[in-house]
Length: 150
Image 1 (cartoon, rainbow, N blue to C red):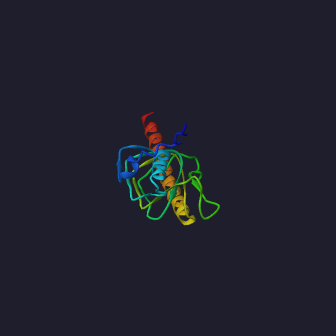
Image 2 (image 1 turned 90 degrees about the vertical axis):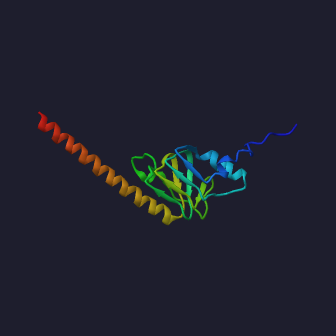
Image 3 (image 1 turned 90 degrees about the horizontal axis):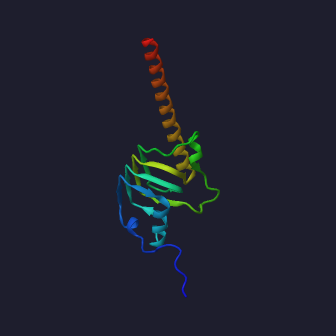
């Protein structure tokens, strides 16, 4: 009696595509499909208005771009960022030359070379600051409007 495979090697539909739009992508499934196809990095794909779901850790490789994305919810955005202890990290789904446009990430951590993680941290912190200022301005305007109505 033979032992069945742990994963389904036939599932390569996510590997063969190079663009995704308005889709929910379960990142662990995408990672496994690429590994089963003999690919250790997810390369050359564009994700537009997608929901990228974990739990997973996304490895930021060369040429990965995030444009107008919601990286996830956290009180301190730095909790989304992980720094590897060595030159490589196990259990990470690596990306290279991929673009994420207006995507939302949920239950995703991010890691990569120190400079990439630091750049993402700066971007997330400045985006949080802008969002916080906008929320404060909205609350102030609402309070002023309510004060005038009384």
